[in-house]
Length: 81
Image 1 (cartoon, one colour):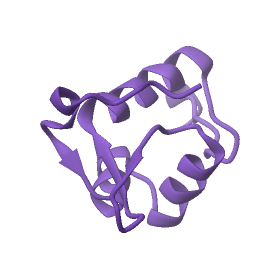
Image 2: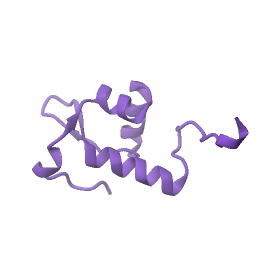
Image 3: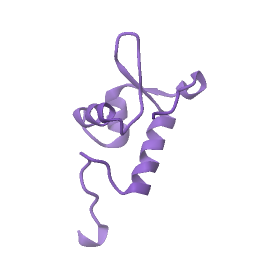
Image 4: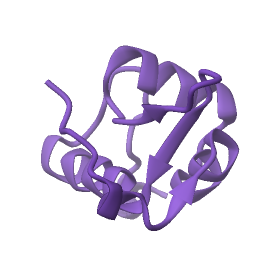
C-alpha cells in the first residue's frame, strides 16, 4: 500500500518530467514505475501525476536497500568499468 500524502508533504512538487530528471530516468520509465506502484505519486483533478521530494527520496532509499526495481536498469559495479 502506498503512503498517504499530506498537504505538508507537497511542499516541493515535481511533474512527471521533473521527477524523471531528478531520478535520472526517462519519462516513460517514471510512468511505468508509477503504474507498477514502485514510485508513489498523487494525481491532480485532471489526472496528471505529481510527486513530492519525500516520495522520490523514499523510492531512492528503497532502491538502495533492495538493489533494483523491476524494469529498472541493472546497477553497474564501479570496479567492473
